[in-house]
Image (cartoon, rainbow, N blue to C red; front, side, top):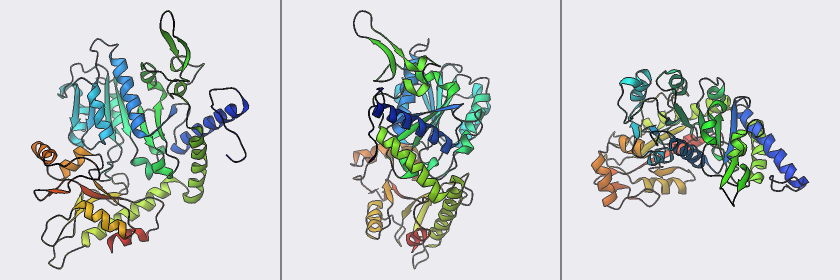
Length: 420
């Protein structure tokens, strides 16, 4: 950036062409980093993972309006992030929340015998779930997209994988290696992998890309022609393959080309410092298992546990089942909960940076805490709300928890600091 001048890539002057070339190079470099073959996958740059989810959701809504049912079915896992849950509001009531993995497995085996608030089994559908719970770090099965694709009853149902938490410490080539087993759409938060820049991505299986090209909205740079007088019409670049590539019809407006330039550098530095994502996965798996065992051993003088860990039955020794995160609450010697906000403040003062509250995972948190549906309404009536200013404890029951994530960045002694 010191030696070159970069311009809006939607032009043909030298600075603009330089920006366009860099964006193309970094797009391919990012796909290669993820292990996604550019022949079978395309990558769309977006603001963040939520923007990627919204792009998919808006596209399904717009396409469904062209069908006889005029709506699409949406299924999502209970452990999903709020941004995944929010898609249900675009379905006009035709959505279903899977309560656990077993319910998903049963549906995939026998979709014709499962009641999931779906009027037409063969109609347009979308199934979304997190590769890793952003609450507990539990990793969900990555085999589901491939199983769904093989079902004769679900040929018009697509998969959306939220990999924002998973991709931080997981070798994504395991997901994209086999295009027939890969999700149709995968959303990513790249800052969670590299620290900088603040940018997201949507990886699209090209065979499924037509879903996105039929969205209604179009922004600058995504159309080859627009008529604003006489008859209103436009031509999306996404519908004009091979003249244009899929991403050219979906990246609205001027791309953050300086951030994308920084992303290319971040990938190089990341590889130089840490090597492969497999090494990071092994390293963080060791750290989280050490932290888990250490937290379990912490006791008060009366023998009562100091921590209540959620998802304590997970296999912390198996990186395919557990990521580098732990969700827990701190207990007093009496067994009562210490407000999670107090725990975060104390940890912050000690130089340990954790997160507390509901962390935008309503299904996971309230299930783990043992809430009934009416109890969430009571918490809201009592003044609790999502965010950092919520009420930590209501009627001796916590409204959130503490979560800690370990990445490739801190030294292993960080796990010891958290324990001691």
